[in-house]
Length: 221
Image (cartoon, rainbow, N blue to C red):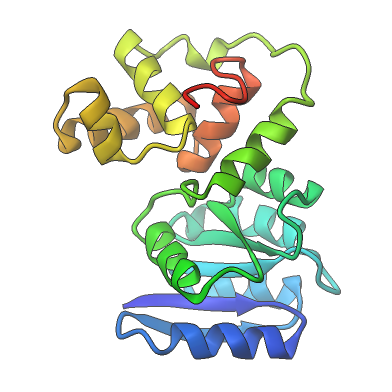
């Protein structure tokens, strides 16, 4: 069972998401929160699999709430998905850097919401939608000259290949097909890369690849 906390200051939004998600046999809403401070507190108390986090909330905004959750070692297994009205919101990129596993726009289709929760709950980043890749590319392009890529020095050539494909939004299965590997081997490479560069999940690998200049917007089409 995937345990979810809903954090949004609009009651109607929470009710809508609840009605969609609770219709699924494998998803349970364990709490609703109207501000970021409540979300942090409930995440610590309940250790849910996924927190759906609105960006703009009273008391504590979604960005700071995300930082506090992802920065707490006791909550390593809690994944945060950012909810936003705008698909190019300045806060979203910052939240992904802070450790969020992806984002959804609030008017997403019900099937995409359900899929997103499942994807993040199993440990993947919510990077497949084109809009997500566009958002990361948009903000990465503002960085300017990339800093020295010292964090990448420990990676083998194969791991660099895998990292570039992760940053392009490919799943383990897609990476395996492109590099002629087994999905299990691709997954092992990703796990080793995460450990070597000290990233929380695949979303942070995407940010790292862009910020170090490993790939640029538009790479791989």
